[in-house]
Image (cartoon, rainbow, N blue to C red; front, side, top):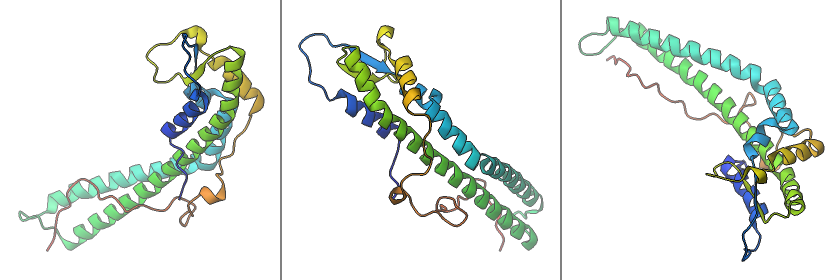
Length: 215
């Protein structure tokens, strides 16, 4: 089973790591950090994006092109079937076979595209998990230096004091200590890939448009 590196879980892990502090009787100094900015702008994040682009970019664009072509071919077959369909909805055998082939091609193209996107998403979450792991001690060090009580993710806060935003400092320290990440999760956390190197194929999804029936 794959380890789930969901965005919510990663953010929660960060919050738990830095919020486990006793409540004080006096007003607390709450520091904030824009974790999403670190996911996007840090050197480590850019390293992960570059690796994912190199590994999957061309494949995903090719699969998207094939999916668009399959959608077009399916729609053309549906329109052609409408022109020759009898009042009871039946169509000639050749038309029926062409529809079935277009549907199968569409299902295959969509499945390949979705599998690649799912794999990229999973690895992106793994990259984020590595950044959070490095960010935790950085945030703790800044908290101590700033004599703050807590550090919380900035995203989702309705309001905060800009003077307590430590994103720039955290980004600088993160870049100084982490310049690259891996896009290969530990083997024990990976699910065996299906043939062709993609995630296991999901059941094909039948296109929404109704298919003319033949007897």
